[in-house]
Length: 454
Image 1 (cartoon, rainbow, N blue to C red):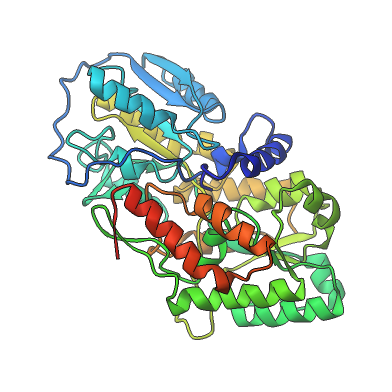
Image 2 (tube, helix red, strand yellow):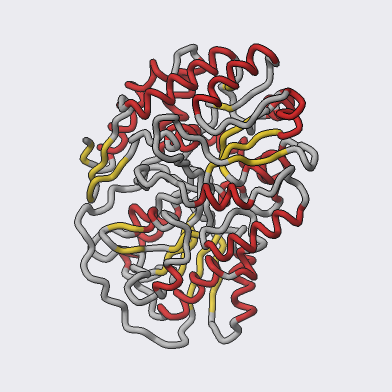
């Protein structure tokens, strides 16, 4: 999820995740957007010209605490590679450390890390830009095409700019429809397959089982869960620093109306799932919850403490008139190889191993973006015995259904939603009422960062 959400909201998620995963930071799992980065150059970068290479030279690797053990495992398996490992924020929790440091190194002409991990899925939007971008285009001879083609469809979209791929995706956070199978069976409800069925069931739940929930609209990542899945063009890049923002599009208004109706009836909450009050009073009453793949272990198991064999996942929903179902994405970290590296071979090999190796990714906390590693990861999920049904088919399906019309940008949808829409909801306004204000907020932020807004 985007990491420039107001600090109070982000801290709630961090505390819950800390309890859930110990040393593994949740929003290193489900990572995305940034605070207010300096606008990047809008021109296309020149052809990549590697620095003079020094075979066998030491590479410097920047990674967050959650990824450092993986880097150390690589180092142990490749003792001939000279490596300096630096632990940093990973650009999580609203940090902007990587870009700030890169800007400093650009001025001084040295210091760039050969490899950097970012929990901010939008960091490619600046790292790929400028006369000499920080990130090297990995598809220009650094990473084999056979490796690049092994990532889930669309997984590398946040890395692709100006016709080149500037990073590798660590993980995905594709959304699915989570549900409590025990409660659904108890109440005699069928799992919906369309948003219309979801809406009807939400209204039925409100009437027959008041207090039970089918979703939340108070999370910072609500746009990515609901509006992205509805194919709402809240941010669609159409060129270098050009973006279309249209929250009055019917695919935006239909989701706003759907949520408004269920909020009014009480079966969709205006709270965040990580608030202490929600965890205490509502966790056991969550009947359904559209949300990212990491909800399974992080939210339902470790945070809500829902017992084994109750929680299951269903395919992302679609509107009846749509040809197919799409989903959004709430996270996924990135690995960069520096264009300044004097040992591109070692740097590229490390990044490839971190994103594709079963020995690392199969036991990672979140769903790998690399398809082969994802198969091994899912096998380990099945071994836990936590879920009421095998989540593998649904996760694999959803990983290929992330709508490509929602683009990585230098601004954060989550921060804007948190500062604009959530307060409006809590003051009694509807999402439909707030669409205009929300659009203005996105437009103003985009323009302030140098975007031309359609």
